Amino acid sequence: MERIYLTTPLYYVNAEPHLGHTYTTIIADTLKRYYRQQGIDAFLLTGTDEHGDKIAQAAKANGMEPKAYADRISGVFRATWDECGIAYDHFIRTTDEYHRRFVQSVLQKIYDSGDIYFGEYGGFYCYGCERFYTEKELVDGKCPDHQKEPSYISEKNYFFRMSKYQQRLIDALEAKPDLVRPERYRSEVLAFLREPLEDLSISRPKSRLEWGIPLPFDSDHVTYVWFDALINYVSALKHKGEETFAAYWPKANHLIAKDILKPHAIYWPTMLMAAGLPLYDHLNVHGYWVMDSGKMSKSLGNVVRPLDMKKRYGLDAFRYFLLREMVFGQDANFSFEALVNRINADLANNFGNLVSRVLAMQQRYFSGAVQPLGADWLKQDAELKDKFLNAEAEMKQHMAGLQFHRALEALWSAIDHANRYIVQTAPFSLFKDSAQHRRVGEILHHLLETIRISTRLLAPFLPETAGELQALLAVPSEASLAAPWGKFFAPGHKVLPPKVLFPRIEAAPEE
RNA sequence: CGCGGGGUGGAGCAGUCUGGUAGCUCGCAAGGCUCAUAACCUUGAGGUCCCGGGUUCAAAUCCCGGCCCCGCAACCA
Image 1: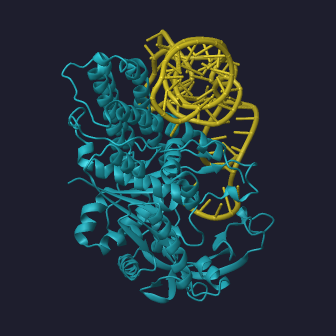
Image 2 (image 1 turned 90 degrees about the vertical axis):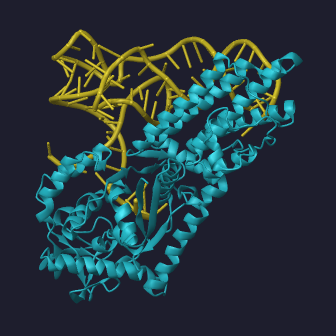
Image 3 (image 1 turned 180 degrees about the horizontal axis):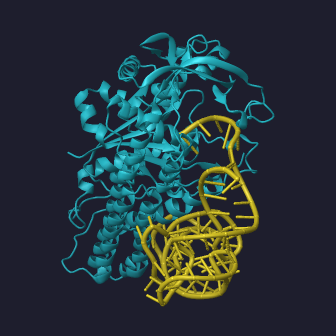
């Protein structure tokens, strides 16, 4: 069986889930559902990154132990994804014991092979940012973030010999042009690699940072973010067993936003090389949601929290907007106006209304009982079916390139056609002539097929809606959704009366 | 020479990699229908695809040069 391994980044527990986290997680979930429907065995990993100074400090500020604090925020993430119905297969925490052990074993292995060495590092350090600054980066000698003068620190750190793998990484990127995609990000990485790579500082002395995983070969130091966080992608699979790792790792597809491109496109592959592990299959990079400035910047409405969106608009409507509105890889604007616009135009008016009118007619004319399909189809009938077959083929093509917006566009073009078909065939007029009742039954049968096929095609994107539609059509199983056009509804099969799936939103609630 | 993104009908955006009648949503105008969530359907108005060169039978799309706008600040994906 074909497999794929999907990962979101590990979310840092210094903040609660917001729009960015939600987008990455939702595309991961959509892909997982999509692949599963294609008969591909998909494993989805998400989780939380919990070590580091910022967490230790935040915990202290809350009068808590770091672990207790991390437990709380990690729990919020997990509960959020659960409430959003995210179909993750494993939720990893960097504080999990198996992860700590595995990180240590990798560090030891690379240390033994000579790619980790003890060196000295000095520079301007900002405690707020938990990072060193070069003089060039400082503004008036101050950290641009915190407006505070950083302290000069010189300390002994362990370094990963990343420079040694620079050429191998370039070769890998050349050999597989879509290793990092879309292409703009690959170009960015290659541009960065034109300069000599420096070695990577991977530890912090315990005296300064205690909340981390101790180095196995020096208990006075703990690992600093990279080896701790990135390795989760492997440790989670190893935790499930060597067979699991062997089965999924070669098909690893990381999903990230552009801000963490460098660690994932440069540090991570060189770390894998040093650890003697194969590279991931693809690094998939998306852009940012840019908040509409001005209007909402001062009000609470500016913070997009997934559970609020669920409550206000419904989870599927929110998912639809995110998937339809952003071009994968590029930035997109987020505004409630655009959100409401999309929901009304696409979900309420086009699709929801299609379902309503078809089910209403089926109910009114035939008490919900599906009528038989004749052997001789009219040209319009065949066109309708072709339109949906084409949409399905197009969707497949676009999903392979992570072009969610185009996949949905293709489906909606078929849905539009179904609305047009109703006007052209005018079953509501034909029904006035009792001699035409058989034809009306056929038209509605075809229309029910558009809904049944749409339900299947929509399911990865709008899982809740797909479930409701399945119930409305009285389709017993997901497998039945996949039956060919005209081969599912037996004469007399009863479908339910219509239900408003997506209520129109009359005014955008501001503030 | 910091890095990156972008400039396409009134608004917001696809399309640009793989040149070949410029497309979508909203808005606007006229008409149709009445099954439906005042939804749906048809037609129309509206575009120098930032500018200038080049390549080509053909450029929004490829090449060169220039102009302009935006982010690199949060809750950071």
